Image 1 (cartoon, rainbow, N blue to C red):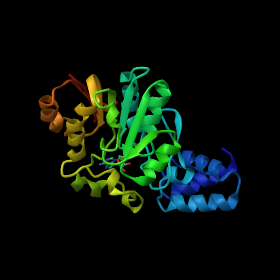
Image 2: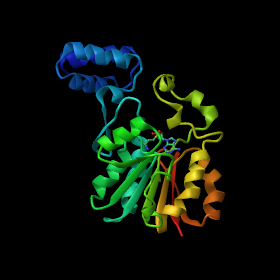
Image 3: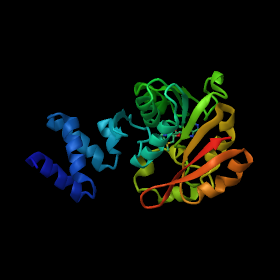
Image 4: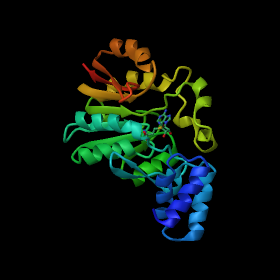
Length: 255
Ligand SMILES: C[S@@+](CC[C@H](N)C(=O)[O-])C[C@H]1O[C@@H](n2cnc3c(N)ncnc32)[C@H](O)[C@@H]1O
């Protein structure tokens, strides 16, 4: 390990950063040999500001995604859901990425299905600008409300990593989370399912028959959505789990 990487790794490590070596390499690359700039970047990181906001990038499904300060940083644990959505999207199909943030999921779908049309929405204007800079066709507004009505009944895949943290659990997120990020990206209401339920209810307007709904969620939330999914006629409900068997999402098909 070169001296500058080793020194910065030690500094970050002693400040409690677990992935200190990876972060040191990213910060050094971002500074491009400018020591004054490096010191400023490291100073920001030491305040707990997300690394991706400092380097302005994150890797998601092997793609480099631009992430502007203030925009939710796409998480690696959302990657399998994005890949599954790409599997369900026909080559010239149509997909909707709700609550797109930086647009990482939409970009993944575009990369896997370049002939498909992928549209996205978000309420936050910084997210809209960032997703657009990432090459996503993005609309500002609440869930489906700003999307082109011409897509109604024609959509093959609706995917959403929407806010789903129960309001009482927001206090248990990482110490620095709300020093920088907005609860708007996380707060899913009393049991975390307020927005999830709305997506389940509103998706049939846009999904074609046989189209797929994929939602990230956790804990007991799949069970909480079960009645709504059955009442609205979704079939082939699958609960998606990670390698530790933790619930990470659901997949359902419009009958
Ligand atoms: C957890 S972040 C996920 C971002 C992105 N899907 C990802 O995985 O990187 C949730 C996003 O939902 C947006 N959001 C919150 N409420 C919304 C709503 N009612 N309609 C559209 N977007 C919303 C927030 O601005 C935020 O960008």
